[in-house]
Length: 167
Ligand code: CA2
Image 1 (cartoon, rainbow, N blue to C red):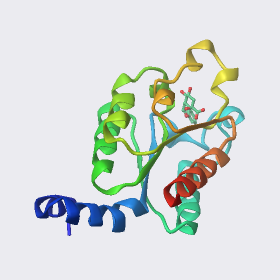
Image 2 (image 1 turned 180 degrees about the vertical axis):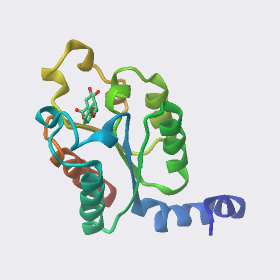
Image 3 (image 1 turned 90 degrees about the vertical axis):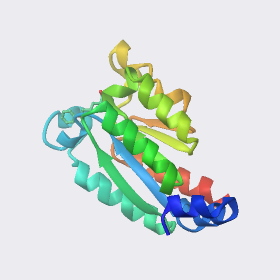
């Protein structure tokens, strides 16, 4: 069954669809330039690649019976569309909006509009860096924020959301 079909069949079917399918998937979103992880600036962002992070997130999520879908894009609109799509089949979102953290009202609005639990991750401690990195539009929408824990921050975010969804 697709979410559209469940919607056509009415609210009871849609609710059941959401508890059996939707609530078992996390959306992992990574913003601009994070595709370069592990190749440059290891002193700031570490040596772990994005593929390593996506694999680890899938592994940790699976421990709690959760699926993952990963998206990385260098384009704001693509990220907004991916967040909107999560409404149909995801239970929560882990996001590192990268530079868009500090500039994008559109991404913050998209997260607000889907109404799913959100965990915001930054590899570096943005508060110990340049002033312009200290503010994130996404933090006002996020249920938890982790910054400065490196790749481990993604794992912490997944564990937080898994625990929250189990409540
Ligand atoms: O610390 C983080 O995770 C950031 O979200 C990373 C963003 C930065 O703009 C934020 O202020 C903090 C930058 C991601 C760039 O990633 C690169 C990785 C390797 C080489 C070059 C860039």
